[in-house]
Length: 484
Image 1 (cartoon, rainbow, N blue to C red):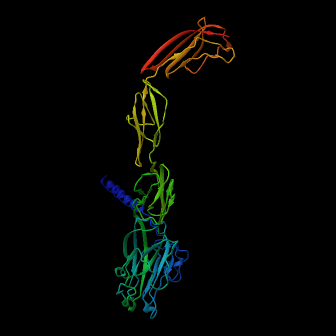
Image 2: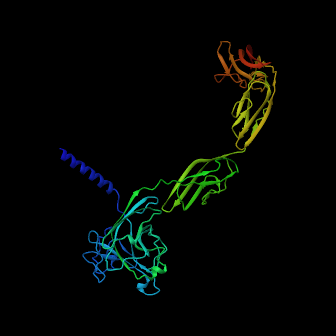
């Protein structure tokens, strides 16, 4: 049982390690140079290696048991498998006086585009192929990996130094002779690269007199290259702010792009703003000529994509406050309620402590209202004087609906504003022939669409109205005569 447990534990640890490592995909295509479209028959045939080709000079490809024996020694020996790439670096004196450095590189597309901000690990194996060549005495060049975007390939001449520097640099003095040396280097991608150049690169010493005078030439084999992502990039976001989000009509405000990473271009959209859009990084003067709450949108473009952020109702624009109390010249009788109303830019604050477009008052006095916001203060005042008012009701005792245009309708008249009113008329048999709650309505002498007969009727009037500051509640019953 103990032995079985040990085996199970070992398998669990091994499988765990396998899956952890297995999650990292090698982004180099054909990283061991094992796949080919045709076996090489000569050194300068890297085009026969699937997914790889020469970038500077003519890199060598070895496979199918082919290698290049020479008086200098054997080169083109794979570290693993049957494929390997060979490169040569040569100083000017090899080609003749006045010529330039010659350093071969090869190129290929990646499996996936690199993510800016993500960390990648590059592992590779290099060796000098023979002891018959002189050991490098000077650090006249570097070898390494230069990542770039395939839509903008670097311009590189066959001879001479290029202006670009590889992200991954390896010092040739650290590479062993005849024995492969492993190099593992991490770097953070600063763009969305999808291609790579591998091989010799010039450095600060390449064009010095000492490097140009040496007769050293070096041949390197590289094999089993690996590129894996080991950490994701930080979370990038777009953002912006304004110096003041609450402004007045015709005011202008600046905006600031606070996006988390470098943006190469941007476009702003300002709802109801002037201008309505901008490509400035930090627009300084966006003006608003109408009140309301308005959206702001920022669309940013960075090297490998775009992002946008919308802030709804981000800018609040107030009108300059105005207020005017509606003038009402009607007489106000003591005891009555009166409504005072205002128009303008709300909200309104009354001297009574109330907020709203109107208030109800019941006594004489001076009343004022204010309208205020961040743009200023406005006000208006009105004086209300209550009067002692009679409250008389006149109830006629006869009418004659006979189409002679004289005294045709029966109605009640009052010299005050009534709080309540009701008129009911009955015939001699106690039947209700007319009723209304509106003092402006009248009886035309019809009952059930038929002329009511001549005779005596009873009018009963109930009303409430203010007189001398008191509410008068009265009921009057009167005999009336309908004449034809």
